[in-house]
Image: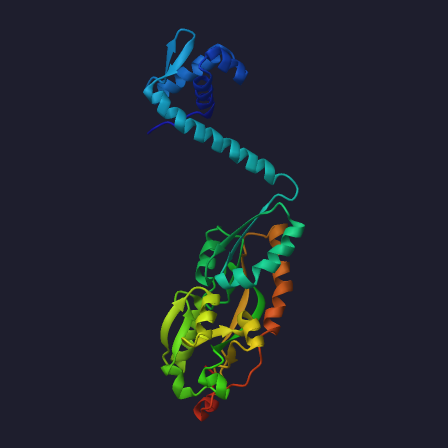
Length: 325
């Protein structure tokens, strides 16, 4: 089994190689010349090759020594960087916040939260992992994030704590020239015939939509799948299809009339947004502050869910209202 290279020997070798002289290297390292010579010999014995050749009072690198020096400089620099990073964490206000969140949460929820968070922790190192609900939980379990913004799932395990933020309702979203927008009604028979522009099929939201319409015995004709809400809205405006979104992600478009939101029907499709953390890892002060800010700013998304009539002109749908999913 190969021995690990001693960092002190590596530093001695690197210093001698760069200065070209044992005496100057010993002075630089605050060591005796014999101690430096002993370190180099021990390193050569460990590696099984000669690293330096003496040329008078100077030294020259062998081929092996030249190769080792390239690696040594990188290794020693990484050691310096690691120590500096740890030193910084020991200073007041220096910490980290690792967040996992979907693209939607990154775009609509995080900006205001992080803007306020930076006022309290200006030197906190923030990393964001864009990922959907299932991956948020995987990263949390692997301790690669501290907190995640995700949808509540029936499959959450007991090691994860779900902190509720807000609920929303998924609705049909169409362009202003779509027949449903002109009549203000969604014809049940036409639902499976429409072309749909939906969020990425790997997402938890897509799974919820698919399950909802399977229970309604109406498979959807999904024409386009995208992972970007803004792109979905633009395609809907162009009349290329119907989407299913929460009204808070289309609040401005709905207000100006460039998009029209219509209820899926009497049986609502609601999502429960929240924060997920690990029960076995207590939150530090920065993480706890982030949670509080998310709770403060997320209430507006629940309030912004537009209240609309069911918009589905089918008596059979009305009959199903009391039965539920």
